[in-house]
Image 1 (spheres, rainbow, N blue to C red):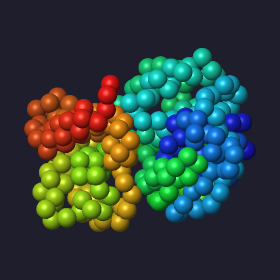
Image 2: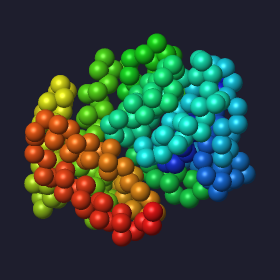
Image 3: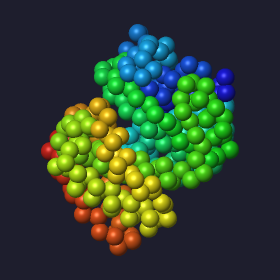
Length: 299
């Protein structure tokens, strides 16, 4: 084994999928809600779709102790990052590595502010999965994982490949971060607003909206010094047409949870103002989602 222990902090659809696959080679503990934890400990974790099968992985409701040479995979919602890291700050060792598998911009800053002396590695996972019920994750499709270049990236990439995944180390992870941000800024709010699966937003009626969101993302990214593949519109139209899952934001709406809109379209709007770039499409997505959140969630 490469690590003495791997903890997956935030075992929703993405975290559970990661944990299950890493458990093929490593000692993994999933950290999640009690119902999910109880189901996993009693009957195992079931993945349906790609990598289908039963995984006998450990699960707990909290991290109680972190051994030396451990990896913590942070896969909570971005909105819960600060609380999650604050909750384990007293447990981390000097050699604890943090691997961030989350959507949106600004994640690294949150973690590095709390753990300034630790190795923090950003990862961008291209995948789809749905939380079916406690102990069961459905519609799993995992395409690839890009890792930020860091002193431990090679051994993590080797581990991921050994677990059957496609993993690459990026010379500039911000390109992958912005590419996924652009995809999510189209996919997440539109599916959440209309409460449909990903493939259902690939219609001619929504094409001007999809492409308007992308154009604004490209303009802001360029102002930030990031050059995204100019064919991304076609990539989204083609790729999302095969996306039969409910997006994470749509699932949040179903469950009446706060979404990650502030770290997706909200960041595009924020940076657009910084560079004096108008972002009306992204501003509209933020406004619509905020309206739906207030109707569904009592804070």
